[in-house]
Amino acid sequence: MNCLFCRIIAGEIPSAKVYEDEYVLAFRDIDPQAPVHVLVIPKKHADSVLDAEPEMLVRMTEAAKKIASDEGLAEKGFRLVINTGEEGGQSVKHLHMHLLGGRSMQWPPG
Ligand code: AMP
Image (cartoon, rainbow, N blue to C red; front, top):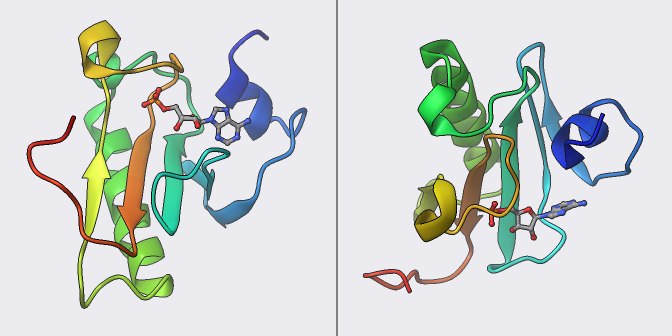
């Protein structure tokens, strides 16, 4: 298995887990870009949002909402990001949603 995030799901590579259910795993980003920076990934592999099953996106978003509340972000807000492909800035080819919060976000993003 040469997918980094599949290896994290399998427990072959450690992660700082914040949430897990039957469909998704969420863990802290190793290079955080905000005080809270969590990655939410589907347990079933998809390269990107382009080949995601709709169910995956629902499960990921529902998990992100729960984590945001648990992390105290619901009142002030947060950002959910799915980088896709080369120009989208995707570096890991396993679908993932970034949950970023704990500071004011810039718009447009860089
Ligand atoms: P992206 O650039 O959108 O593909 O996001 C990939 C993210 O994975 C980056 O923010 C990385 O910091 C993060 N990352 C890479 N390796 C690990 C790891 N072993 N544990 C946690 N986060 C990671």
